[in-house]
Amino acid sequence: MEVKLICFNCNKEMTFHGLIGRREECPHCRSDVHVCKNCEHYDVKVYNECRETAADVVREKDRANFCDYFTPRKGGTGAVDKKAALLAAAEALFKKPT
Image (cartoon, rainbow, N blue to C red; front, side, top):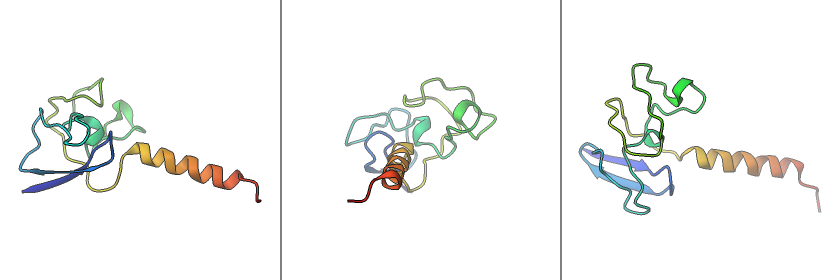
């Protein structure tokens, strides 16, 4: 089974064959892969920043952890790009015409 994932840190695509282990690293930036920020359940708007209510509390969302509920985030980019897109939209909205 091939798993494609976008790194939360460098926003580059990674490809893994089989399950993603706790010690896996991004081949581009060497960040841990089995982290909350790469998980489908990660959501900054909910309690504990995780939509999986049975998961244990993880304090460091960008460090490797032992969470059994880890599910690789599908497609798309991370929250960093959403923030950049919102800032660009706000700047465009309030930009004075030349």
